[in-house]
Image 1 (cartoon, rainbow, N blue to C red):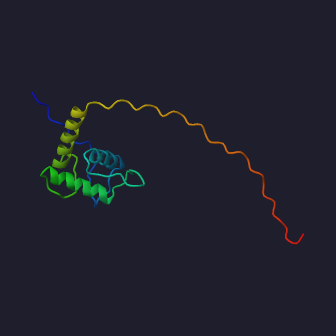
Image 2: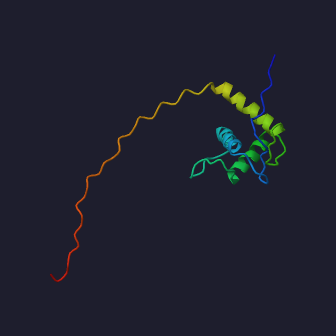
Image 3: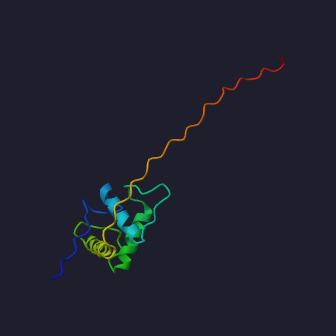
Length: 123
């Protein structure tokens, strides 16, 4: 017996014309990035929607044969399909190994410099 994949977890509607939950945005950006449909901006991933995010959502909808409206509702077809794809990807890739702790770094200490004494001209 096959179990149906859970829809992608959303706290609310994803829509360029509506206020979005920051946690939803981060989860969706992470999922779309794992699928190669969202590229990390120079400033890093933020919990705020950006044009690349909505382009990635539309690309996902196109690739999955869904309506390309850049909208995702908690129990809608895009959330269901994204939940299924992410679940299949997790099964295929297995659980992620725990991250190795980053070793502490020793702060770089610069020796104190002599204060500069201004030169007086003509003296």
